[in-house]
Image 1: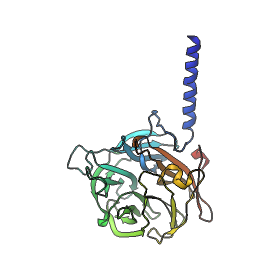
Image 2 (image 1 turned 120 degrees about the horizontal axis):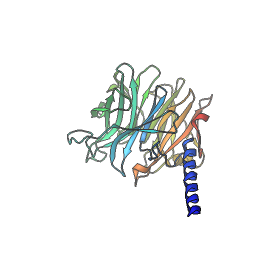
Image 3 (image 1 turned 180 degrees about the vertical axis):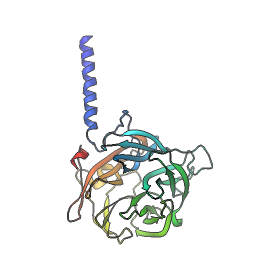
Image 4 (image 1 turned 30 degrees about the vertical axis):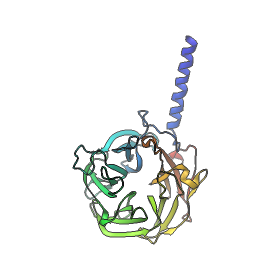
Length: 322
């Protein structure tokens, strides 16, 4: 009995040690638990830095159903605290975000003029599949919410599916979104309160692309996108431009290493700035049979002096090494 007890305790110590070791590093494509030991449920998301702390917003999913927008916080990008639901689906059947609606790719930005946190997301109405193709907007006084849903619409009457938000150096905000059954990728400048698109809405290119992830180095804009192949992974592509409205020039595939030709089995969602030329490339490794347990592929992204972008596969890495 004593030997069995000792062996059992040894196994517990080994497991605890392994878990602790994993918490000191990011392990791409592997299960990632929060500080409570529960798998992180924040898919298709983005990260915002506020007052020295990172906040990760993403889709909270069941096996397939949407369950709102979750938010996690971290000081090191490795250990994440579950802050709960930032945006909950409604019980009201007349609400656009009633239970049964689909919320995808939520992104949050801060408006210093209104002192509001503004969330945009791709919204599909209950019972309509992917027919609605709308953008949804919600606001909050606190970064962790609860966010109050304002409305949904088609930006300038355009279909809006996969999307992201971007705040430029001058404080202007933009909504980048897949449109025209995902054949077109568009960008719209937002109003000063970040709640609506202006009529400055332009076609970037029409190449059947989705999953936009934009970042900027100096005066150069970069955009990583995915092809439209359903849940199946495909080759990422990079475009660059001197203006957010374009023209955008194709710049190849910035990913390197095993399975780079299929985005390491994932799909882009966001690029998080860390320093002037160092970033974190964020992607989702989707599990269409159980979306809740889809995993995350986070990898260092660097831009060299010639403006070349590179993401290299790493089995494990630490943000401290960026």
